[in-house]
Image (cartoon, rainbow, N blue to C red):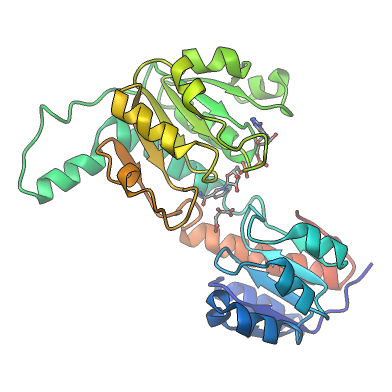
Length: 316
Ligand code: NAD
Ligand code: MLT
């Protein structure tokens, strides 16, 4: 089935490559990023378009979808489709697509960066030097070699993190309800149940979507089952780790450090967590590289062209 597409709206900062590919294929493209933060204007404008491309700033809620009387397709230049009401879109017969592989390497590399940076207090060292302090004794770190990294979610990013951290000498264990042990063994991850995983881990990194089953997956009860001083990394989605429980664990020493790229609310409101000296954090930068942004822009544009030519419908 070919989708009849003529006019496409891009309402977020998506690489120019996306605009170029769509135009080369005969589509009329309007890029207006001011619409991302102005729901009223977006609702007024959206009825003129057959296609919408967003990143994460535009919230494609049910009222936006209701107003989108001509819309046939919504594309997300990224992995998660959390900012799109997929149920409302489906009810209205609108296709929703994402570009799941385009930022895998970037998100995996940031995760590895967090693991290494927190082990060697890279951010704390930078901040204290800037303040004129020379704190070598206080910033004693640890090697990751020989430590156990537990990976919860063994999909695209989990696998790449495992391969990379194995090069640093880490033992990798993991859990995923869909990926069986025979498959994870091929990329060097020993599949283990969650109950057995918590007490073995020196580091825990989560790479799942945020769904009811993963909301607050790491909570007070889980922290109590972990080794004292366990390090936690979340470069997936805010909400997978209960932030209040994490703060309690950091204060008690049960958690020895956290690397956070994503937050339950973005920008984060829990400033005590952000300001905790054992927290290394970034403002949702997992996919924020030139390479990933070029890839997802190109991927979503080509997926729109394929849908228009009746070649394939790919994504969410
Ligand atoms: P993926 O779909 O390839 O892998 C996710 C895995 O999680 C799947 O294998 C799935 O079976 C598993 N899973 C689902 N429920 C689970 C549970 N209860 N326990 C354990 N595992 C479970 O996705 P991906 O591309 O690897 O992305 C992982 C996460 O990273 C997503 O939430 C995505 O939105 C996020 N992400 C963040 C950034 C960023 O900028 N920080 C960038 C890219 C992706
Ligand atoms: C994603 O889901 O692709 C990431 O969180 C990155 C982004 O929001 O751009």
